[in-house]
Amino acid sequence: METLKQMPREFIYVALLFALFVVPKVLQRYRVPAAITSLTLGAGAGMGLGVFQDDATLKMLSTFGIVSLFLFAGLDVDFAELRGQTVVLVQHIVIMLITLGLVVAGAVRFLDLDLRTSTLVGVALVTPSTGFILNSIDQLNVDPGAQIWVKSKAIASELICLIILFATIRSTSAQDMTLASLALIGIIVLLPLVFRLFAAFVVPHAPKSEFAFLMMTAVACGAITYQLGVYYLVGAFVVGIAAQRLRKRMPAIASERMLHSVESFSSLFVPFYFFVAGTHLRTENFAPMALLTALGFILVAIPVRIASVWVHRRLALGESFKKSLGVGAALLPTLVFTLVIAEILRDRFAAPPWLFGGLVVYAVVSSLMPGILLGVRVPEESDELLKDQPAKV
Image (cartoon, rainbow, N blue to C red):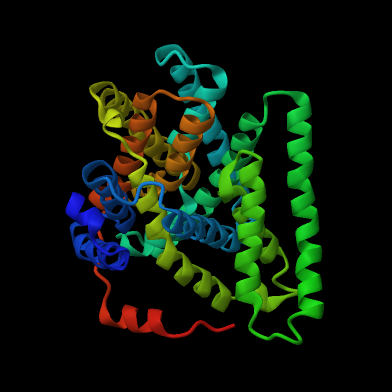
């Protein structure tokens, strides 16, 4: 270990890059998502080797990762598509909120947590990680029709849970809630104006600068919402939605090409986010109490979430068992959302190590389940060729 620390820093970073971009690809054939591999590598580096802990460079790269992931999720929101599925999505949200209420009540009763902490735990357990799901859905054996439903349900659920997350964290006082809400509303109101000014005064003199502007705007808004206590994800998601809403007036800012560029940027930096999250893990996070807590989360939350989607879709749409199960299983991953909330609980709510560890283990298991239940689709050569072709604007 001491020998590793004495190695030139450049060699260590090269080894890390190789590990983050090669090892996950090797393990994907065994149905292990790349994000899980990166998280595990980070845990090994932090707990086993004692390296890369509090590394400023990796922290900056991880910020780009989480921001780009939620920017991509926001850009992929299609409100016209959501409106076309309004009835089913409203029913889905109502069922999700009922499930969330039951989980919160259970956390208060059985884990002896206060209401705010229990609410955050509930959100961590039931909220699908849209960015993670959108990045991995093509690798699963899910038919295209079901993929559309998975995407819509994940986006709708995340929109609602982001509001709940914001309200819960800022609910310490009426004044605190008011000021934070005004700040967030200010961001939402000003973003369209900022985009229009950029399109009018910058783009004509600096063509092809939209991507850099979009990314830096997402980072800036993410930093603001981080200071509001709701991490980078809210600001980045709002920027993505604002850009998507201006798609008709500013086609380049939310075009298919831009979406592909943000997705590619995200795939480059997201591994650093999961790796850094892994370096924050400690051995006490996996004590018997943490593992027992995780087991309880897994045995209760995962079956309830699958069953609620399956029963709802069978009754509302008359779907087959296989298709309904596919939608329910594909919505299980909570990795990013749970990791973010677990860190908020640890840093801002002084959550005990067993709760933090239980949430992390649950996040990993829930994100492994789609590959186990549905299987991984092996892409055909024609799929890869089409994927590599540039998207049309």
